[in-house]
Length: 68
Image 1 (cartoon, rainbow, N blue to C red):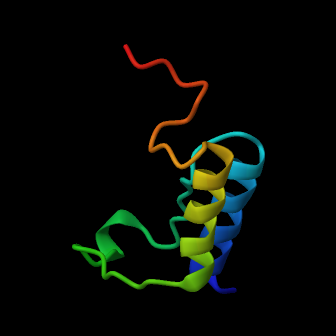
Image 2 (image 1 turned 180 degrees about the vertical axis):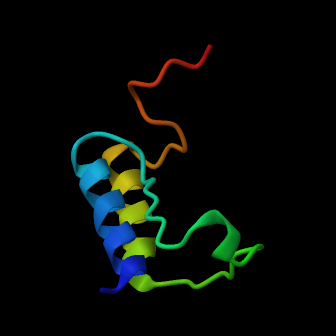
């Protein structure tokens, strides 16, 4: 299983349901993880953020999230 792609899929679903583009899939125990995590840009992940911006008129905040 491509865990990065699975995480991107969860983030996309979250945006489609009105949430923010966030998701986490943990595949190793805490003592086996490498920190800091490496950066790996994927076009599908960038597309999720573009979808979120389209749904929020390009604003960095979601329309229905209170500011205070």
